[in-house]
Length: 82
Image (cartoon, rainbow, N blue to C red):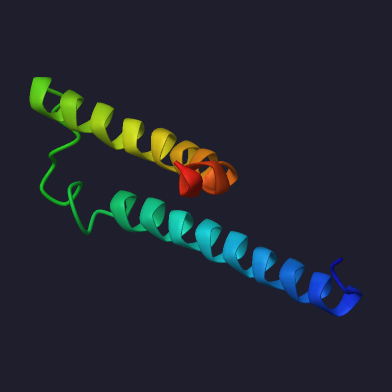
């Protein structure tokens, strides 16, 4: 059984991890859209096949990555016994 103090600590760690994940994603969005990386030289303003492919890769990673993290975290005990 989980004690109330341990439960409180666990919730604090979970809240911290969620906060750090959100801050990281916000940082990436601001950094990549600020013009410091690709927008500075106009790479995304000329949407050709190469840039469309890069956009697809970026969206795939941003959407699939968190899903895989959640999936494997929830099934970590099953995977450990396999």
